[in-house]
Image 1 (cartoon, one colour):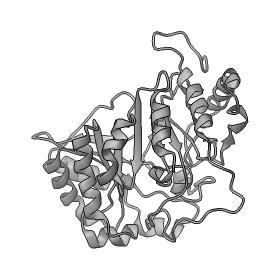
Image 2 (cartoon, rainbow, N blue to C red):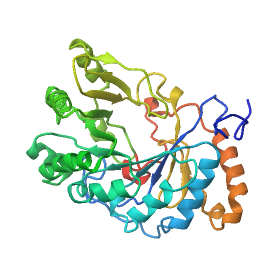
Image 3 (spheres, rainbow, N blue to C red):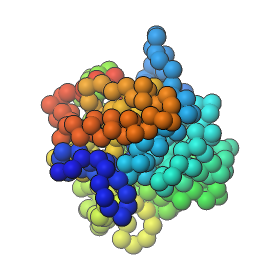
Length: 337
């Protein structure tokens, strides 16, 4: 199999030795987050001593340009909380203007959406995922450390008014905390014509006890959806790993991201770069590879492309979560989840 640049009508492709094609980059802009979610940063964000600086806008432009030259077309700006980055709007505008990039998405806790959704749309953001782990104010507060559910729900309406094409909700499935809200979430997405992603809580190096206490398999959701007649959907181009179900009688979709399920990694189409410029071939790999040396000058583009081709070719076939191995990931805010 040929790795990297190939001749095809869509341009170059970035592939690995396992036949997977990578079209989707999750780019962290900061590891800072203002929420204290119990499954991620229960004690709040703490800056590591001696941490290197985040990528500059020029470095981000060169990075995304290199990936785009290899056929990658979807960028998700993540964190931490990406909208905390002072240059957030400038970064979004810069990335959206790079040749070959067709979609800019963000994942956000939504605390600024009610006020800023139109700004986001005006700067090229066409897809937004909003983290909402409960539809009950007191439970939302307990999980996230913030009493902001009503404000975030207003942000959903603001996204619709702004004309953002794709609005999805993310909810981490937590046994004993929000698993009793499944029917409420189903009713909510039907009423508001939304898509929801339930995500299995994942074990990281700082939460083994929490994982044991609160993990539920994705089958908990799929069994319920099938029991009420929801229909499994085929995966769309550029989509992530969610197994998606649709309401057969009206609006509403629910997806399940189940990293502990069989063959989860077989359809992997994404790569990750941390806020400081480290390439992570897997969310649960053994540390990142520094790309900053290849991002210092526009003249380095061909060197960057060659470096990306070589690194991606060696991507492992699967993570080792099912063996209790979380790699070098300390918590999900560290490289954008």
